[in-house]
Image (tube, rainbow, N blue to C red; front, side):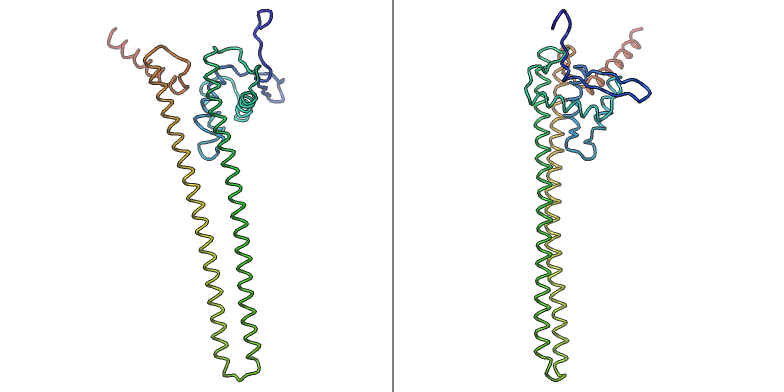
Length: 265
């Protein structure tokens, strides 16, 4: 703070560009926006991706709470800036508003976000490596199948050459050998197909287990948010309330006021 003015760190500001018909202007994020953004990121987990886990959900939730027009990209970039400053433990990473207690709690939630981001990065890298390993294995099995079929064909041709100078009485046996070769080839292909199917099923089960684990984490987070609301009900209004709890409590307050006005004219 200098000359009675508040020091705003440039690194914690966000620039939004209006349409080309207007001039570019800076729209700084407030502490309330930062706190709400971190809450929504913890709730939706857009770093995991997939249905219900995108930055569009975060944008929709933030739009309901704040009149400032920002898109999903702006919120994603802002979150990246907050996370980057938090990881760097930069002493200049401070806000123009917000008490020390509020900033401390926000940083605790940023640590949760950082853990989620690291987990998402690890999961993505693991899936990529699994796909690469599976592809290499399928290619090896395919080449092995070609070698087996080639060896079987060469063996059949060798037997055929040995029988070439004999009488036609071998024709029936030769036909039988061709039939055996076809059966053996089909059996090999069926075995390879079954092996590939089993590996694909195992991978699908692994993905399903991971999805169930993520759903469990979401349920735990929802429980924690509800627990925060329960604690807040015993005292005065607190900034710890999440946006959804605040909207819900305001709705209950309006209904209570309406009932009171009706019963006590």
